[in-house]
Image (cartoon, rainbow, N blue to C red; front, side, top):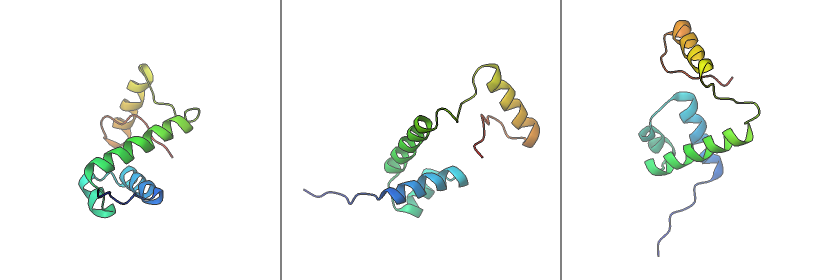
Length: 88
C-alpha cells in the first residue's frame, strides 16, 4: 500500500495564516504549499475550529443586532460588504 507523506504542522500553520492574511483561494494555497485542495480545506477547517475553541473567551462572532451594526460600520468605513469582524 502506498501512503502520502504527512504534512508538517508548521506547513499547515503557514498555509492557514497565508490564506487568512492574503485572502488567496485554495488553488493558490495548493501551488504555494504543494497540498491538494481537499487538504487545504481540511487544514483551514481544523485551524478555524481550534482558534474558535482556544480563544472563545476573547473572540466573539457578532450576532443579531450587533452583526448588522458591525457590517454597516465596515461598509461605511471601507466599502466592504459582508465583513463580520476583524482580529487585530
